[in-house]
Length: 308
Ligand code: NDP
View 1 (cartoon, rainbow, N blue to C red):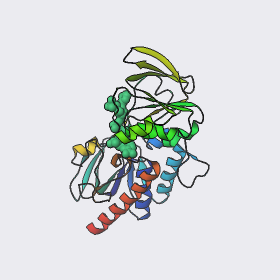
View 2 (cartoon, protein in one colour):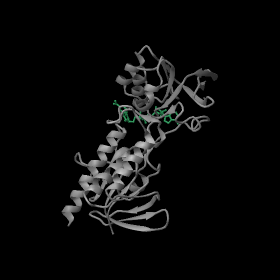
View 3 (cartoon, rainbow, N blue to C red):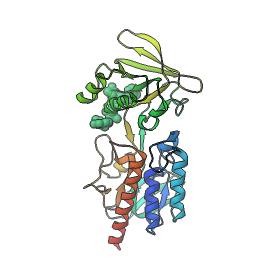
View 4 (tube, rainbow, N blue to C red):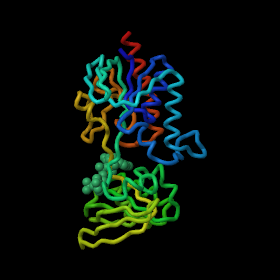
């Protein structure tokens, strides 16, 4: 029987592993849906404290993992394919290689997956002008036009943030009605650098080795055109990787984010904790995920100590 299993090895899972390993719990960590988490798919990270010259996202994730391994955490790149959760434990996990593992406590740090446009050029140019995080990558696009895709609060927020750097921000939304709250939408509409393209589809992202434009379709006039830009920021919402746990009884909100209880990392099932983007509908930043991981490890440690 394992004392503590952590699912996900992004900043949340690996930071939880550092704290749990230093507490002598010898945590066993399984990679989530995206091994290393979303940070491995960004280029340089310039807003993680302690790195005044920025740090490569993949390097950062690996360093957090090495730090955890140094204290006795064990990482496996297999996936967890099924879970059976019992309040107070033990919990039973099925591993993709066929094993079954029991654990007393579980930390879910399985992340969230940004929704994609699913159009030609998006995958090929991801990391070379296509990004799902303006906070992470916006500063790389100074004095050039950029595109934001989406019509929700995130799209408004990202568009406003990007006005600090870009020469102009084209906000492209598939419907003629925005989903964003009135106040956010008004703020974006009043900004001189933001140009709205409503009822407009992005049909292709173009560029050889980096983004040079988007092909768009004005649905009202059925008119196609090429809009030059240096970056496309998708702000289409996130899908938390929580279905497996929801199906096993973990409470999630309507969008699938795991619900945390009483300002802790505890879920509705005793002995099951959650951290990072799978439980964070709002911030979704590496530093926040790392902090949530630390909290989850401390909550798990207390749970295990109380159970002894
Ligand atoms: P939302 O789900 O609210 O919005 C996603 C947007 O992306 C929608 O406009 C949707 O279009 C569009 N979209 C989704 N899939 C596609 C696709 N395949 N092609 C084109 N467009 C697509 O996500 P957000 O991340 O904006 O917000 C999530 C939550 O966080 C919300 O509750 C929001 O209020 C909150 N939030 C609050 C903020 C604040 O208060 N400061 C800041 C950011 C987020 P459609 O409208 O047609 O469905």
